[in-house]
Image 1 (cartoon, rainbow, N blue to C red):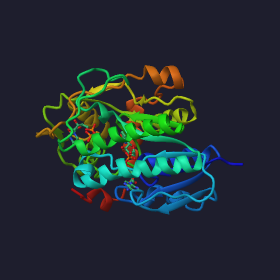
Image 2: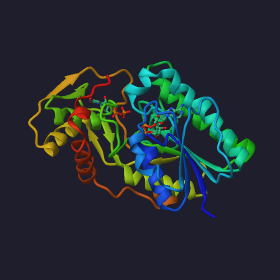
Image 3: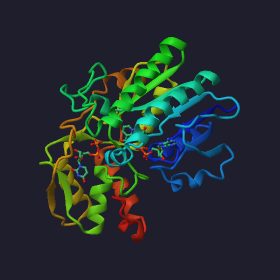
Image 4: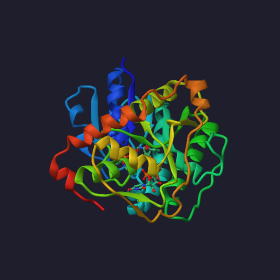
Length: 320
Ligand code: NAD
Ligand code: UDP
């Protein structure tokens, strides 16, 4: 019999790619999403699949799934700083109450659950690169705190269910991931820069652009999550690409990639914007035998082609 998996946040960027992957592996997939930051178009190609079922539902109310369940991937949560600043309470609720509901369901169904945590649990890190032993440097009451603390609570309650109820749990600390199906206007740096280049606008670098990020292509991320779910390891594991770049250099790379002659303009650095970020993936290498395979050049080319294929109306649409 096919294994059954519930994926929350299924209509989002990562959730939709995970639906694709698990269906490809022969799983029966139940996707759940309230579409607050997601888009049904990300999964419309799956709607006719016999093994795919979609539930339009807010998981902060309750989570229920009919029949047996083998696995839960809990990915529902706004993920872009602009999104979670716009809907701070929903962000806190989905990370806390939403996670509680998912854990309760996992316990009821005797299912293994993997939660999508984040490099943001390290805050503005004082240790570089970040390994899983680092406790982090988070400003709980700053604007980003709604996301960071929700995710820290999420990890904490997940470990409590693991220790107290013996639930099978997995924690993926996901570092910046990109690829097709990101929302063009979600404010994250890759869609922001590509959108600006395609519209012929200047690229907005926040601060002096010396802050760094390390970008992981979505297929690599999905492979890491797949392996972690099927592993027997319950402590957190960083999943990301250690190839680090400053945001200013990255803006220059985008100008080269898009073949445009956009200027770079500098805007104020948002409060608590982490100054450096690079995953130490020794644990993932050792336990999951995993490391990213797709270079930034390759991944960005695919991502650029995706955004280029959007309609002109889509390209001009503004949310913020
Ligand atoms: P996304 O915004 O594209 O997807 C999140 C999905 O969750 C959306 O479809 C949204 O509608 C849904 N959702 C939010 N609240 C919900 C609720 N209450 N009930 C049901 N559905 C709800 O974001 P993403 O980039 O795909 O991120 C997915 C997960 O991965 C998030 O948990 C995020 O914190 C985590 N993550 C992502 C990254 C990244 O770089 N993409 C990095 C670290 C962690
Ligand atoms: N950033 C930028 N210009 C933009 C959007 C983002 O310079 O138009 C910067 C942002 O300040 C941060 C980095 O790019 O330092 C990555 O931002 P993103 O929102 O993608 O992710 P996160 O901060 O969560 O890593």
